[in-house]
Length: 243
Image (cartoon, rainbow, N blue to C red; front, side, top):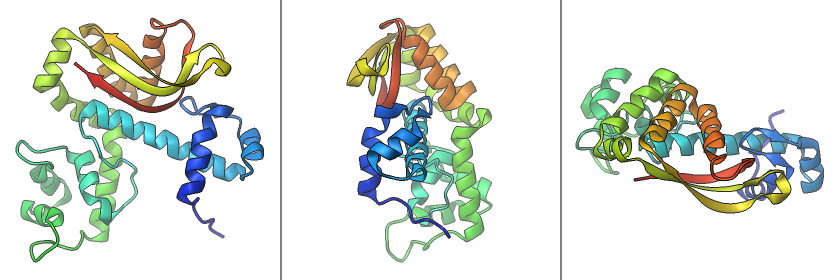
């Protein structure tokens, strides 16, 4: 028998406390202890852990590729069509979505894609066919889960004016997380800022392109040791790359 998903309130309550039982970032949570102290099932803890790690994957993808708001969940969802198109195909030169690339890949006309995205009214098509929604969801997920797709998504960042400025002059990253030096008892929810040289910008981009969210986490852990030795991230809320 299928179990009903957690309510939003229950999910939030568990998510807010999850890093008290280990590292969400590393996927190391004392599930039995968390379930006992939060008075929920171990299945619920695992569900929230998967969800929070999925959010982190989306945070990295959106902030590094510039495709913020993209849906890389891989779940077909007609109501989130624009976010999945953004994940899979990125923005166009003069539009929010590269409708030409989407049309070629999904085997429809550019006008059809535009009508999917049109406001409510006579010009809008209700939704794509089921097989098209499934294909789009797979493509959106692959945009963050495969090396080739990550490199393709990052290529537009590298060639942009902002990307060139970061590459030539460096920048900084701001990380809002439950974090701190040494053991968990010294960690708390805080923001840190790490300066980046041009070489460090390139190593960050390469780490993400080659290793995805795991590569990015490893790079962040390494970079943070220059901030304070033994620094560790337990649960990342958000991060931003700035010039």
